[in-house]
Image (tube, rainbow, N blue to C red):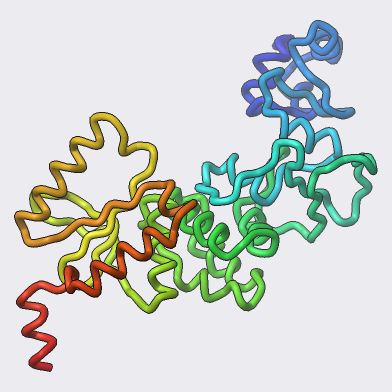
Amino acid sequence: MLNDPIEACLRAGGVARTRTLRRAGVARFFFEEAVREGSLIRPRRGIYALPDTPAPILHALSHRAMLACSSAAHQFGLWMLEEDSPESPHVWAHPDRQTTRPLACTCNCHREHPVGRFTLTTVSALQCLVQIASCCGPETFLCALESARRRGVLSSAELIELRRLVPRPVRVLVDFSRSDADSGLETLVRYRLHLLGIECLTQMRLPGVGIVDLIVGDRLIIEADGSTHEGPARHRDRMRDAAALALGFVTVRLDTAMIVHDWPSAEAAILSALQLGLHESPFGVRVRAAV
């Protein structure tokens, strides 16, 4: 027999049922001893976890539940606009099963019927997005959805199923979503401009510049810069802007603070650029005048 409960639990992904450990060849004595020594945690009867298991997962397991909604989104690596409160994680429990959730618990418990393939600790990506669609704002849902499509955690069939499952007003966001958005910041800018009636080209490659986030009109580049655009990356961005200018493009750069916390200033800058005609090349102006 293996008799190493730590290794067996690690192979199972960090959290395992009793029967999983037994099938791995671990005698009950050894994983019970590991709990006594503190090298394993037992969040509830029949479930064992490594000590470094994230607290929200242990919280969910202790309630006979699993991570859900925005809390599960982080497990899938999705970009989230709204941050969870550590004291109030989102969990899901089967609607037909009793939970051990105490009355004083502050977690947000979802109880809808399951969809997609779950793990021991987390709902499916499909269920996660369905929950976000009902629980969070439209921008948060769209950012999470485009992040899921970009990361490949949602199949084409699941995207179709998602559209069927979300509330009717949200379906337009599923149709609007893309799989090539480089970040949630880019998603926010594109969606907010769309609401203003301003359409963009996305993820366009320019010679000598590389791929840019958004292009409005013929030549106005909008770049949504996150935390990865600091330090040496900042210099590379300026070099890209110079190369784009040499091609006749004008670049407006927006950082996280402007997009998330001061959108009116960002919107005013973009609208001013449009009013000045910075999005139109001389050739584009002539073409539109001739139509």
